[in-house]
Image 1 (cartoon, rainbow, N blue to C red):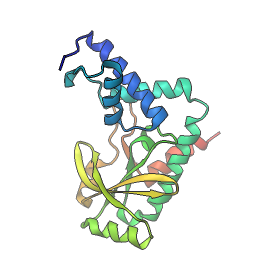
Image 2 (image 1 turned 90 degrees about the vertical axis):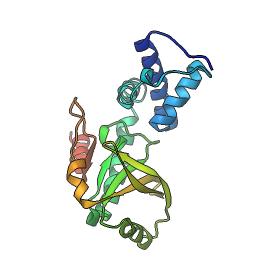
Image 3 (image 1 turned 180 degrees about the vertical axis):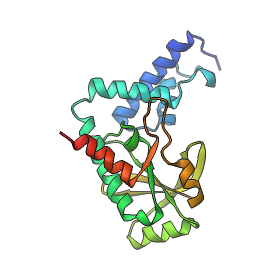
Image 4 (image 1 turned 30 degrees about the vertical axis):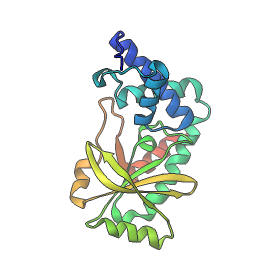
Length: 203
């Protein structure tokens, strides 16, 4: 398989822009969008991992794409995503949930899933809660947050897909309120999400 060589920054930016468009238009996750962007741009040519855009690179391009092409629709879709996430978090408040991903970082849209971590000594406690709410779920790939992975389930609720991970209560403080260098939140709790919604709704 051939290796592809081009100016590093130019290649990284082009892949990031293409991946961002795929996320915005098709709702792909970052890893899938990055892989499809490479395939669309370069076919079977291999790109060294160190020359691929990071998730942050793609997120920056996603923000730019949304501002340019989805400025009329994306803010409202983001607010709807946050409202649904908040309703679910209020219901599962006994597990002190935190939400992360597109609902928090501001890139959420009609395509976005809701990503939540609940905290319990035994993940079966959360499973039982879901069953008692008549929410059918399936095991899925682990939830990833702050470089850590957590067992997770996936389910559909109020026309949204959710990924719900479970972590130990002792891990909560270390996961909450981390921020990007630009001040963007990575995740927040119920009160923090309420504040984010209020900021959008404020005149």
